Structure formats: C-alpha cells, structure tokens
Image 1: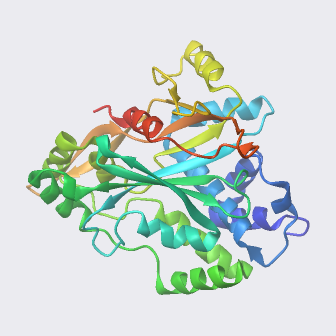
Image 2: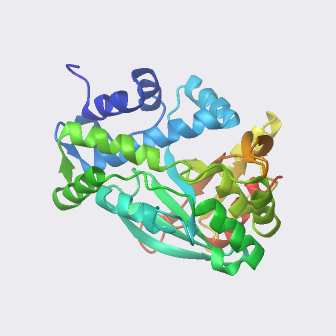
Length: 335
C-alpha cells in the first residue's frame, strides 16, 4: 500500500485493483486530489464515486467501452463531464421519491443544485448537481425525475406495481456517515470505503423485475418510464467533454459508430452535445403464470459534449439546456 494515493487505495478496495488502475489511467483527475492523504475528503470521495460509476457504465455498454479503449490506446485522457440518471417522482416504496433519493447522497459529497431544467415533452424535470469545490474538474450529475402523476391512469397503475417495490440501499450506518461527511467534509478511510460501496450500489435498480404487461403499459405512454423499469437508477449515460463535438461525431460515424443523427446545440450556442446510440441489453420480465421471459431493450449510452467559455464570467459554461436534454433522451427510445 505504501506510496499509493488515497484515491487509488479507495477505488482499489471498492471495485478491485485492475478496474481501479484502468479507471485512474483513463480519466483526467484533478491534480489536487492525487496528493490528498487521509482522512478522505469529500472531493476525493466524490471523484472516486464518479470513477466507479464510469467503470460500471463501460461494463454495461460495449460500444462505449470500445470507444474508451481506443482513446486509452491513443494515450489521451478522458475528461469526464457528467453522468446522468433517471428517477421516479411517485410511489417508490421504501426509496425516497424522485431526485431526493440522490440529493441526500450528493449534497454531503459537496454537490449543490446549480439549475433546474423543465422537460415538459417528456413529463420530466432535470436538475444539475455541480461540485462546489471543483466545479470544472469533478463531474456533474444530471438527475432527472419522471412525474408519474402526469401519465394516464393505466400507466400510473403499472408504475405503482413496478416502482412501488423499491427498497432503499442506504442503511442507517450510511446515513450516519453521510451526516458526518456533510458536517466535517471528510471521513476516516474505513468509513469512506464503506460509504463508497453503498453509494455505488445506489446507482442501480432498486425494484423487482417488472411484469411484461406493466412494462408494455409504461412503454406505450413513456419510453423513459419503461427504461427506468428495466435499468433503474443506473447511469443512463456518461459524457466526455471534447474540444469539437461536431468534428468528433463525423469521425466516429466514419468509423462505424451508430451515432445520433444530429448534434444538439443549446439556445445560447455555447453547449453542444451528441451521443452514440444506446446499446441493447437483454432483460427479464415476469409473466402472469410466475415464469419469466427475456426481451432486448435499450440500455445505457455514451455522450459527448463541447462547452465554450461564458463571456459574462470568463469561465467554462457548465450549464445544460432543456432542448438539448430532450433531444438526447431520444437516444434510448428504440424498442
């Protein structure tokens, strides 16, 4: 263990040494975090969580893993801009409803809500959580919530049956650790490791496998609800910040990547986004007779973003855009 950085030890203990080393040699990390010793600061813990979730997405999205491996082989580092997840604002059993399920985890790590983005066409609302200490170098979280009460009655009933079975992965001990982290800004290594494992597990599916009929009812009225039914609160996508997203999109298309047709441009022109189309994944569904069946459904995907300097502040424009987000959501709309 001698000579290893605190973030390397933390990640290695949480996800395994091989995966930790791969992540630490893939992502561009704030240099200040590489010299932090124990105890574990909230910044180190936040970056370790992001690295673990980035690795989890690559394990679930082969097309993203292929691209990241190509970047790694070129000797470049990836600037991880943000990760996105979807939540349910409605009956979620023992899990807190909507964005609150994750605000309670992110705020002790140093995150604050920078802005709120209405997504009325999707019956959703997005919130951008930015890190207070390192806003440009520690990835943001874009947390969206789907308003179940805006769906037709049939879909609301299906949603209650699916999401009402959710359990809360955060234990009372985790709650104590979060409280201490929020109060002091740091944790002893053992507590930080235990919390990191719990936080990583929170970004998953907390409800039972959906019934096929309920899934189809959700799919008919909200493809986003159907996606959450199979994938839960896992990262819907991870996003690389690149200098020229238009140029990169053209290059990836030429190399055979299934790219989104158009680049989304924010209303102020400073934020541009596109993505590789979501990979398909096989998921289990419950049948009325107690058996299960398998279906191919849209999984997660990988996104790219370019951000310009905001002339009013002289800083990187870290905002999002409701129009961009609505367009990007279409990447998981394949059936």
